[in-house]
Figure 1: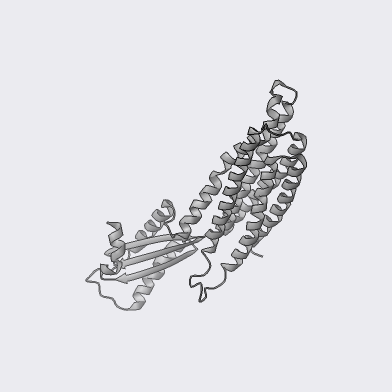
Figure 2: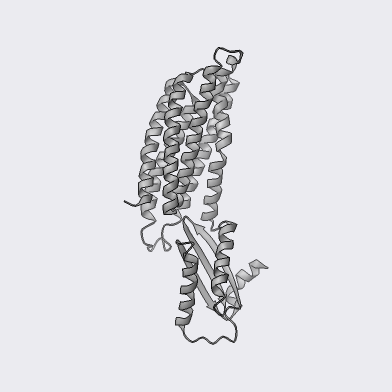
Length: 307
């Protein structure tokens, strides 16, 4: 079993456990904050099952219906996951505000702390394991999963800290705040964590719309190409880059000097091989096309966009 599949199976097992734990504790002590935590894990569990299928699917060869394979399914799954968590966060925020306006609700803070210790420990350990797997496999799915586990862990940890404070203020002049504590905590959690699904949504949309990758990736690939191309005849070039999942697509229009005498197709293939090897050293998941021409009209639409 490869590392990516191990990471996905781990995520499925832990999310199932955390979902049952969170919803059970949340219903038992009537805590919206813990219920929110549990439903976050329900979403993660469902998406982990889908992600496992996509991980298998993306390794399948292209076919008549999907000429470029199934790479676009990765950002699609991440987009759906980000949207679900974002919508769940908005629902929780609305519910918490409504509860405060209605006078709040009481809960058992002692049991909530026990839940938070179990949940935060499990989530943060899983996040650490997934982060290490993502670094080894360069898997975007596992990388996103690690970020989600980190968010879940921090949410659970903050729940534990907040309910610990509630225990200590129970017999103090601040005890009036206790009925509002759970809903206030939900609002704080949502406001702190909602940038994460928003970032995932934006990144996934960019990949689905074939937008350019990060500036760092573009600059680095351009630098690698220019360095490698110094050894070959080159009058000008036009380079386009996009990223889908882990795979980076590079399209290069290579303008040869007008006086250049081509000795054979093998010579151009050797140039392609050299350029590909240089870029692949840093970006192993690479699909590169190099179009050689002596006429800039074949890159005319790109030239016009650059002006």
